[in-house]
Every structure is written in C-alpha cells, then in structure tokens.
Length: 251
Image 1 (cartoon, helix red, strand yellow):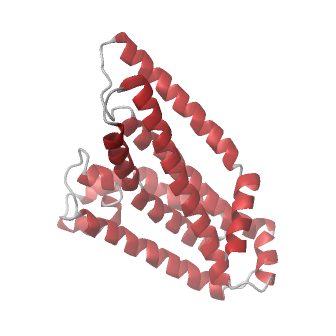
Image 2: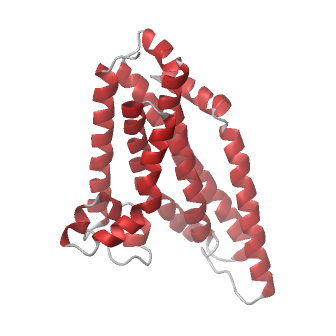
Image 3: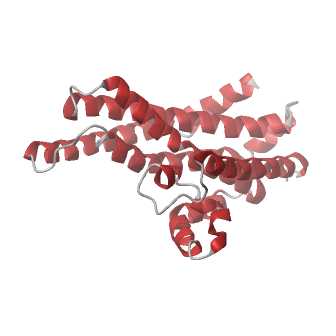
C-alpha cells in the first residue's frame, strides 16, 4: 500500500502539476493580501482578528475543491483513457488497494492544501492586520474553520471517484460532479420549501454556514449528525466504486 501511495504521489506531483497549483494559489493569496492591505490602509474599513483569514480560506478553498476533484478524476478516468489503468491492473496488486490509494492520496493532498493555506493566511493576518492579538487563540479558531471545510471535500472527492469508475470519462465525471457543486445551493434553497429538505445531502455540505456562519438554519440539530450524514453518502459512493472497479473488466 505504501508503494501505491508513493506512486500516486509522484504521478500527482510531476504528472498532474501540483506545484503549478501551489504557484497559482500563492498568486491568489498575494492578490488577496494586496487588496485587503489597500482597504486597511485607507482606514475606512479596519480588518480585525480573523477578518482576513475567514473570507480568504472560504473563498480560496473553492479552488482546492475544484482542483482535487480534477486530480482524482484524472487519476482514475484519465488513466482509463490513456491505457495506464490497464497496465496497473496487470500487476499483482489488489484492485481495492489500487482504487483506495488514488482516493486516499487525493484526500491527503486536499487536507494538506487546506492547512497550508490556513497557516499562510494566519501569518499574513498576524503580521499585517491584527498584530498584538493572541496568536494561539487565532490558530485554534483558524484550524476549526479549516476543519469545517473537510466534509464537503470528502463528499465531492468520493462522488468524483464513483463517477470516474462508472463512466471512465474525464469530461462526464467533471460535469456530473461539478453540477451539484455549483448549483447545490439553488437546489437546496428550493428544497427548503419542503419538510423533507433536511434529508437532501446538498443542504448539509456547507457545514460552516449551517452551524457557525450566517446560514438560514442547520438541517439537523447537531453538527455531528450532518457530518455523519455526509460521511454515510461518501462511504456509499466508495463502496459502489469499489464494487464496480472490482468486477468490471478493462477493455
């Protein structure tokens, strides 16, 4: 399993250009800092504790979500398309380990990206905007905010894994996965008109807005119920992906 994870990491870093995404995120971070610094220096708006970290993390996390969905889609559907998957399945490696390694390395990369972004935002916030505030208190608050982003990541990476195994098409997987990502809030808002809306997983995915932000009200009375509900969907997606991947022939 360690060899599979290492192999997937090498392919992700060199073949799928993680380093280019890191450069792009750095540029976005600098642009965000510059914009916030101009507003702060003018004096009309004073940026207080976490007022740079919170919007920065929530907005830039969108790019992490999109990138990691593309990453896992390319690792599965893309390798079906170029024939790499067939070569990997010839080796004496259990199929479930091969698929799990692709999902797991994507999750590890996504989690690392979120916490790297959180640390970078914290440093900028502390140095330029809220010097003198309790840094340890801000670290705790920022990392809690980062944890709020993980359930959505798990859901969409798992959904993309299932769609990639099922369709074997990069384009179709991205369309199916990105549709609820971009239109989920609209679907959820319409569903809120009905009593059964809390059973629609799309109403649970924005855990931060539902339980810590300015959302219209949590779908369940407890955050852990929502996290568990999202987790159940992710597990179902992965089990279905495993069954299809295990017994479907590679043509």
